[in-house]
Image (cartoon, rainbow, N blue to C red; front, top):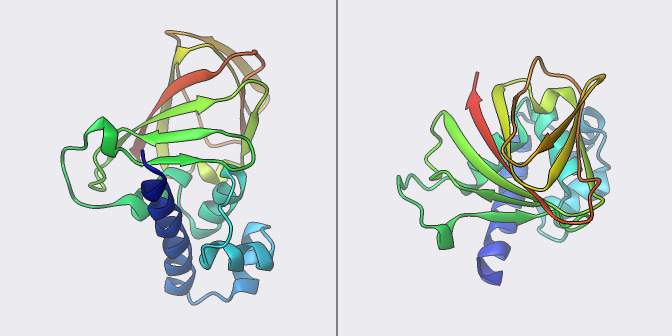
Length: 189
């Protein structure tokens, strides 16, 4: 993905956050209170002056009653049924290097496939409301993923696939010293 495509996706995310907030007639302060993200950070995101982390986007999407994937999918939506690998939307967390590639065509369909690259030593937590509106499976294709789902911890190796249960606080962790790559399959509830 080119730098201009990454900039376009950042701008699309910025516009989508603002659209979702305004559609609910929420002030910046109200969204900040509902999400736990500072008003200043939300303002920077909406103006395209800051690229939000996965954790921040998870909090914002939860406040909107959307999953992170749905929020990003809305930002990426084009209606095309075929998407070539070179044209798949890629978003990278500026803080951790976590990379999310949307494999599925951006049509807004019920099934969504994502490829995630989690750098060595990186943890990405998500609140329960990030999982409320979807059924999700994780299929590890490279490396080892430590996945905490509430009080349960799973060690997933290449080839392992886990179906998530009821929405609870989760954490994705790469304890290894090489990148962990996994595919997430989502179906909206």
